Amino acid sequence: MSSETAILAEHGAATPAPVATIDLRSDTVTKPTPAMRTAMAAAEVGDDVYGEDPTINRLEARAAEIFGREAGLFVPSGTMGNQTAIRLNTQHGQEIICEARSHIVEWEIAMASAFSGCQLRTIAAERGILTWREIEPHITGKHYHRAPTGLIALENTHNMAGGTVTPLPVMQEIWAGAKERGLPVHLDGARIFNTSVALGIGVRELTRGFSTVMFCLSKGLGAPVGSMLVGTYEQMDRARLIRKALGGGMRQAGILAAAGLIALEEGPKRLHEDHANARLLAEGLAGAPVDIDLDSVRTNIVILTLRKQGDAEAFVARLKQRGVLAGTVGRHSVRFVTHRDVDPAACEEAARVAVEILTR
Image (tube, rainbow, N blue to C red):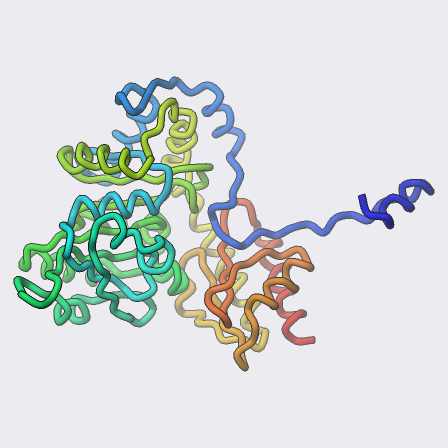
């Protein structure tokens, strides 16, 4: 208790109300719903390392069914799912083609090289949307001086590009070109259900040409923990060994899978609300002296760039003082992410606070 609060309490005065927090740092910050908590408490469990957790088995089977795949694997995080897929699809000494700002480049601590022995061939693409025309010149076959291409990895939606959406025809062209070259294509689909809602196309159709697909339960879908990897029976059998090598062998984790099942079934139904709130937030922020691409705001991520090389960390610190939490993207940009636990009023208030700070 601060000295000021102690004095107020001693004299019977009301203590100052804490500033309400509007948390827009990520869609990973959501709390489990009452239905999730009930399901978690009642979950039927077993030892998943032995394949004996019935709730995890149901989740894996349901994820595979939704994506039109043979099998699925529950993993603790999206990073583990991506790195498991990279190990599955590549050999040591190969190269992975991906977009320059993709998650496997920026946020997975060089695990493609540390764990799978691969290097990343990055390509900067407009709004993070890679095309076959951009990819094809960077493909290397048998060569005595260069690493051969082993995998193409896409991200949809693209986090660091502001939640941008890669259209289905663009992916179809990549699938066809990769198939002709004999190359697998992995999807980091952490927010693929956001893509699905934005395009009005089911996830099965959006992902049918990928060798493997990872998607997160713990982002917009709202589960407290976990991601899924889907593919063939053979791939997922091998993936279990890789998951174990990464420390991801969980025991009675049906408690987590129970929430994941609810997230998978119910979460996609309300993602349009997050998209609408992100648009509301972006339009409000556009009134400040910042650069923001409103045309790119199609899902639940908003990124603004401060003008005159403004200090993003300092701006985020001032937002926090006013009860708004956001994250930095580099030195001059800030990211806001909408989710189930923020409503339109909260987004309007966050925009108002941000504009007020920037225009003082």
